Image 1 (cartoon, rainbow, N blue to C red):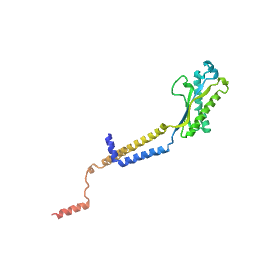
Image 2: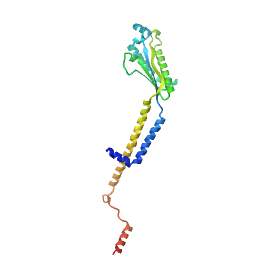
Image 3: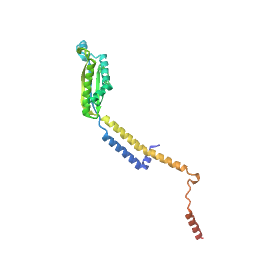
Image 4: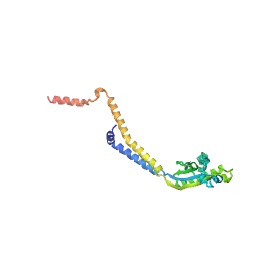
Length: 236
């Protein structure tokens, strides 16, 4: 079907098309009013070598990144993302969704760095959950090393933290735009489908008539025949 034919259908079904477009716009406005905004807080931490291990590099833990630290970071992140830890944090009031992941970039120290991202609709709750997850990370690392001499324990340091929840415009606009596009597609497509259905019904109805009746004009009834006969007699 050509686009000019579609435009003709829209014009022929103008009332239906306009009503569906208005309904789509009203649905978009309703979703915009009801869908809550999304906020996000983020922090990054790094696992550092113990004091005993740092002696080999002059006591500087930032020069002692090893595969063992990357493995420890992976264990800590998996523990924090586990269902038991998630339920525990939720029971303590840290109910917002969070993720503990490695950076997307790659360096010698990447495996030791963990990024904590908290997402939610309540800014205060998002900020509170971020602090809760960082505290849980410290506790988890301490529990893993509870039987190790303090001088040989891995430590954790916060590299950067943005506890103030920021509005995530993309997370809010994307579903809104999707709702609007899908609504307009449905509003502009339904008139075309309905017009096609009605045309097919009309063709089937015309095809179902007996061949002798197609195109035949309606014959005058009995009263019309009597009138014609009386007119012919009067004209003689």
